[in-house]
Length: 227
Image 1: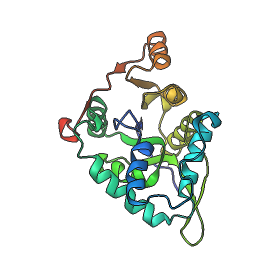
Image 2: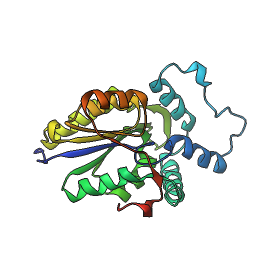
Image 3: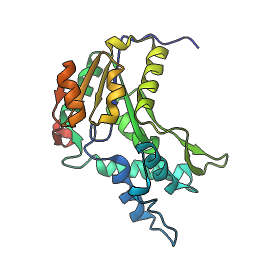
């Protein structure tokens, strides 16, 4: 297949960058309300037992072992439909950035440790052309195993973004990235125009050192932006 030529891409972390909350945490409350645990412990290991963000990410997804992917996808859309109506559900300056990049003809790409069943409706809302995320492993019968291919966290985000830029024929120096957490540092460093969102001390220190712009994580409703 011929590579698609693209002038530039704009990569966006999702949790607390595009949306104001952590999607996996917010969705878990929604899921539990409709699927209360029946005897089994669905809380996962205690935080003290999880040593890395990647391990925490894997532990979270094991909660859905045995769930049909179709059921999770349907629940994800119901969750997003409710979430998007919240009065402080989005980070408004970032939504404005999404609009500006699309108007400039750049591809908008979501990059997240969250899962596709939650990110797909957001991508549709924002007009994102691609979603780079933690992919769930599914059995031949369409049921989730509880495992993932690789958590889309830290260096994995940068590697996935670089791979997509190569596929699109885009120069990393012409591309943009937005992130709010120190785990987004590799992604931000992989492009020529990184933007720090919010007040993460590590990222703000890097922004000051390297001259990166910082945008406030001002929350508001979807209708409060030009997106």
